[in-house]
Amino acid sequence: EAQVTQNPRYLITVTGKKLTVTCSQNMNHEYMSWYRQDPGLGLRQIYYSMNVEVTDKGDVPEGYKVSRKEKRNFPLILESPSPNQTSLYFCASSLNTGDRGMETQYFGPGTRLLVL
Amino acid sequence: KQEVTQIPAALSVPEGENLVLNCSFTDSAIYNLQWFRQDPGKGLTSLLLIQSSQREQTSGRLNASLDKSSGRSTLYIAASQPGDSATYLCAVSINQAGTALIFGKGTTLSVSS
Image (tube, rainbow over all chains, first blue to last red; front, side, top):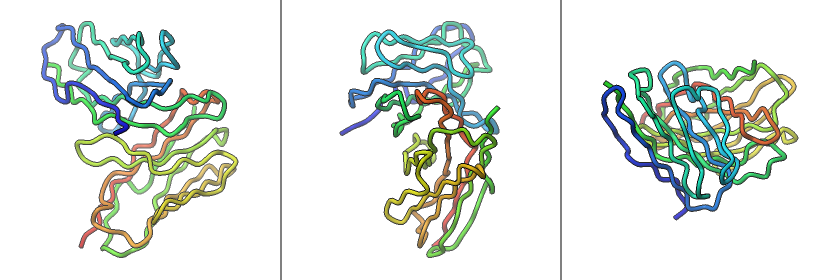
């Protein structure tokens, strides 16, 4: 089954304790991205990756890191989480034609993070 | 700066009604537009993608239209069912590479039986 998986689905942590949220897709997609969703603010892009070893900042990258060492995986790293990073996080992937805008986006189930 | 607005924020209808969800964007220079469905506790599911050169796309009971010049898109749902209850979001692609997507805040639809 074609899918995007995220782990963990729920996480409670404390300020300053490094954490990683994993994202994996089995569709051989080049493009992957991370979003956060907050009430009243909607979905905002954190980082994206056009392919292996190619990453770039989205609209709200502060406090986050990513890496793309393999095509299927795109982990989101919070080096020193703070309460304002409490949010619902989504990973997404798609093919990357690179010439006509976005392709059909496939989203993971989400990771709900609470930073105390 | 591109802004995407979805009105109304919430909508309740009885089962069987045909309904229209609206999405408007401030800058007509988009490459395409995508409609998504989000169920509580779940991720987004892509429903329809319309390229900027297209006027509409259809999938089953869903029909999405795009009027780029006026900055509007509509999602038409025919013969609504309780299973259609969800939040519907639209997103526009503002660059050729497809890396910059701007999302609306969504319309939460409730269909009662």
